[in-house]
Image 1 (cartoon, rainbow, N blue to C red):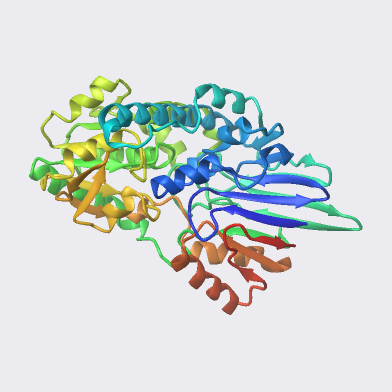
Image 2 (image 1 turned 180 degrees about the vertical axis):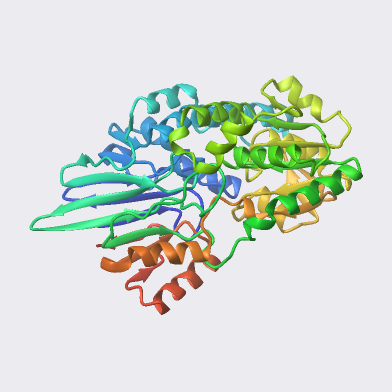
Amino acid sequence: MRIFFAGAARSVTGSQHLLEFNGTRLLLDCGLYQGRRQESNERNRHLPFDPRQVDAMILSHAHIDHSGNIPTLVKQGFRGSIVCTPATRDLCSVMLRDAAHIQEADAEFINRKYGDEREEPVVPLYDEADVLKALKRFRGLDYHQPMPVLPGITCTLVDAGHVLGAAVVQLDIDLAPDRLRLVFSGDLGRRNMAILRDPEIPEPPDVLILESTYGDRLHSPLAGLETELAAVINRTAARKGKILVPSFSLERTQEFVYALHRLTRRGAIPPIPIYVDSPLSVRITEIFKLHPECFDDEIRAFLQQSGDPFGFENLTYISNVEDSKALNDREGPMIILAASGMCEAGRILHHLRNGIENPRNTILIIGFQAKNTLGRKIVERQPTVRIFGVERSLEAEVVVMDAFSAHADRDDLVDFVGRCRSSLRRVFLVHGEEEQMLPFGERLTRLGIPGVHAPMLGEFARV
């Protein structure tokens, strides 16, 4: 048996890990790679394996860097089942269609506005018809319900606490006369976050494929989160600016709206207009309401006492394109949440194009920004950034609040490994940039964890 690390190897996007066992192939995740435009296009269009030779797939969760290239996988010949939780299946039904729509809309916009400056027109990676074909292959699997996925391989999903429906994948593999347990963490969540339950610990594995997004970093304490957020909002409102929040439509938007609801209820921020400018966020929020089995006790109590945590008086959800465009002509103060979270596509690009050069405005970053994305360039406060092919001066205030992160930090990851270690003999670190991953690997080795290794992209490893 061996693992082919086809994505998210020493990087945080394009999660793809191919397990080969007894002549069968099982794919763990099939995410979109996000980074430099030309490189992203090439890597997403040309999968590093033959989809026709993949027998089944397990999806850890619905984030696009884990699920977003499934339509390409199916388009290029994959005919197996895609196993995930019911909540992940429901989320993918809207997120993948939205990804196709964004690709088509952005291609049309760029070709129309800048076509004369480009050598070749932009072509979407896939369309909605491709997504619908892919969705037919999804199979829902509840947490803690073992299911055979291939001959000799049984899958059990446990709650990863990362986003709605996210799972840690436990694979029990029959190596007669022995058995081997391989666990793929997907993305692990933080403990004590609002809305979702804490991450669960699987049965002790022999081999662990572990994310390391924040492997060498500690998040800001949750205790000061709302105080810091209120301060950002109040000072921007005082100068009549707009607070532009690039936000992942899944989980981050709901967490942020819930925090704004709590601040508004106790009068900690002024009653300024709040817009969630994302048709996808609207649909995802409705899916949240369909899966209360994923909620923690805190939000259950809020639901009983205060009603809808994702809806209140000065909050408006926007789906219509014309209503979205109208926000650019309105004076602040106001708060605008829009996708995508790494500022690589979607409506946030239009709001940044119109607001990034205004020093009264604030760009509030509440999610991880991968290398070479527009979001990372904003976090690095580069003096100019390119939006829709045009250089713009970064004059707006930039605030980074990592306490909103849905990823486990260094201490959370160390705790997870420690609680899995009784039978561990190999640990493969994935989904992390080298400056986070390599120090984390050294830390695990010092703690006595055996066989810690950070594979390179395209590496095969025997287990």
